Length: 319
Image (tube, rainbow, N blue to C red; front, side, top):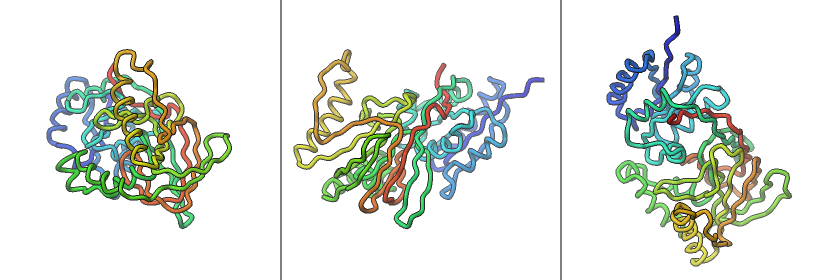
């Protein structure tokens, strides 16, 4: 007798309409011959790693992350290297991994059907060791982007209640407040086997994929399965530098490159934006700074080491 396939749903109760999701799951279970889905709730103390490990111990065929980018990151951290597939039920503000994989964001039944019947795609994950000022360290996985500087401070300055009501518009207020701040990062870094370099910049972002909400393409050459990390250092020193950097990101990367033959269009060189790629980045700051991973603040650190783990995460995508 063939054993029924079974899924687990690791869900953030604040982000999803659980009764609606359960009804859709029950319909698909009956149609597709799946067993009853294992429902596992996240919490503030455990955003998804523990429930995902519980799902692995139960021997499910796919673990569906239902929540925002933080839930997806936490579940991916537990599933990395396990060989068990990650399904996505986008339910948050950003939904960045789903966006970068070209998955729909609005249709619950379609997202669940893909999670249960889709094709497994092996994508890269990034593993970051964060170093605290007290000498301690912690290791985390991310699947979209991690950063220090303006983007991390923007997240720490964003009003959570306003974010719930207004989505990404809530970040505008924080962006204005942070950009006025003259503070910059001063750090040294070594990329792969290259010589160490010293840099002064407003932001450094390490990405596994490149698209942000509003279809903004921050890292135009990034791909989730190319085996490398894409890095951008933002270092405008004048108002004109800010204008040039934002023009390149929003106009050239976000619009021109998406036009027919846009990839052949001349690319403007902007000194305020420095792009590079590698598989292993070690960075040390002169003083602690805020850090974010996949859109969630992770406190302050004096440095980090990040490496790519190629093809270590299986994600369900449409056949």
